[in-house]
Image 1 (cartoon, rainbow, N blue to C red):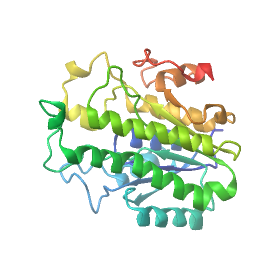
Image 2 (cartoon, one colour; image 1 turned 30 degrees about the vertical axis):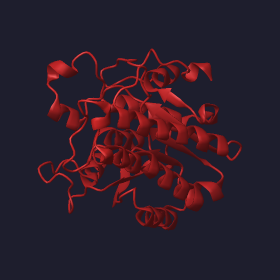
Image 3 (tube, rainbow, N blue to C red; image 1 turned 60 degrees about the vertical axis):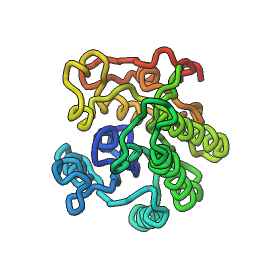
Image 4 (cartoon, helix red, strand yellow; image 1 turned 30 degrees about the horizontal axis):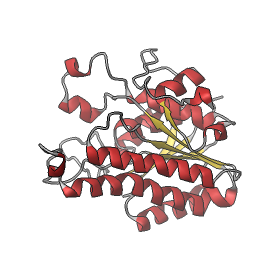
Length: 283
C-alpha cells in the first residue's frame, strides 16, 4: 500500500511548480490532497496560462488515480485561511500533513527587481516577499494548529524554502527566506513534545513552468532539477514515523534524497547545495 494511504494533506500554492508536484506526489503516495491557490479556472492569475490553476492540478491528480479537492484561498488573508481550516475540519475531521508552499513574493505589480546599488532596491519588494512568504506560512501554520493539529496532538508541517546564501545574494529575497527559516526553527522548538513536527526543505534550481518561460534550455541544462525531486523528499518526510528527529531544521533536498533513497524523475540525486552542511545525516 502507498505510504500515506488514508492521510489528509494540505498543499498551499498548488497551482504550479513545486506546489503542483507536491500535490501529485502526495496523492500518488495515497494521501487525499487538498490543494489551494489564488489561481482557479474561474479566476485565473494568468489568463494566458489556463493550465496554471489549482483546478488543473486536481485534474492531474484524478487522471493519475489519486483523490483530492481544490480550494481557492489567499494565504495572506487570515479570514480565508480560517475558513479553509474550519472547512477541512467539517469535511475531513483532521489534517495530517501541511505543506507551506504558497509564494507570491515576486508578484509586485509595476516594480522591477533589483537595483544598480543596494539602496536602489524597491521598498515594496521586501514587504511583498514577507507577506507572501513568512507571514503566509505563519498564518497557515497557526490556524492549522489551532483548528486541527494542536487538539489532535499529531501532524507534520513541511515548508518549502531556500537556504540563505554565502556570500548573500539578492537583499529582499535573502531576508524573506531567513524569516521563513527562522519560523521553522522557532515553531519546531515550541512544538517539541506535542507530537507535531515542523521541518523545512530547500530545493535547488527547479525547472518549473515559469522558469521554462524565462530561461533557455541551455541556461537550465546541467544545473537544475524537476520540482518532483523536492516533492518526493516532502513525501518521504511526511511518511517517516520518526520525522520529529528533524523538527526545527532546514534540510537540503539532496540530503533528504540520500537519506530516504529518493530520486528525481530521471533517477538522479542532484545535490546543488553541497556547501550547506547540517543535513539530516547529522540528526
